[in-house]
Image 1 (cartoon, one colour):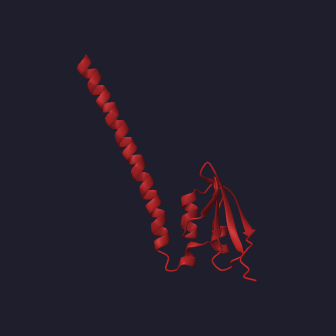
Image 2: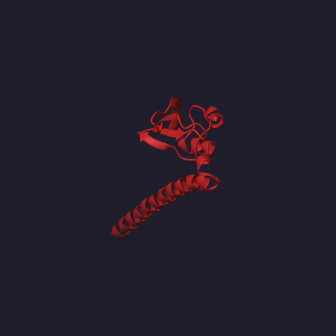
Image 3: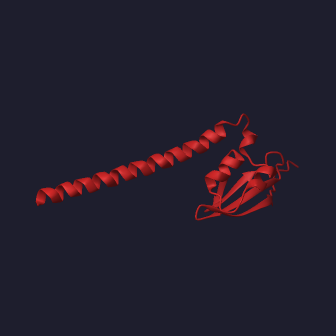
Amino acid sequence: MRQRYRRGILVLIFIVIMNLILLLFNYITEVNGMYDIEESNNFRWQKFMNEDEFNQLEQGMSYKEVVEVAKGRGEPISEGVYVWNDEWVMTMAYEIHFDDEKLLDKKIIEKRGYSTR
């Protein structure tokens, strides 16, 4: 009876460890996938977003799907809020709000502070 109990505990511990390893592997794969998206861009500005890409974004998309559309990661400004600079216009950016890891709201924002005068 004790032998079965110990074997059951060992099997349970093994299953938990394997699940943790799989979760870590999935996380690393997802993060590396985002780096691969950015590395496929020939120029730094291609990692930013443009208006056509912004218009392709739909409510309910995941952050990873948005990164795939924009071909680059956004800059986190608060929890669940990311900003992508515009590819061409330095005074414009795209603010994307996520809730429960799904796109909730998106808006074009005006950036200030780029003047050299």
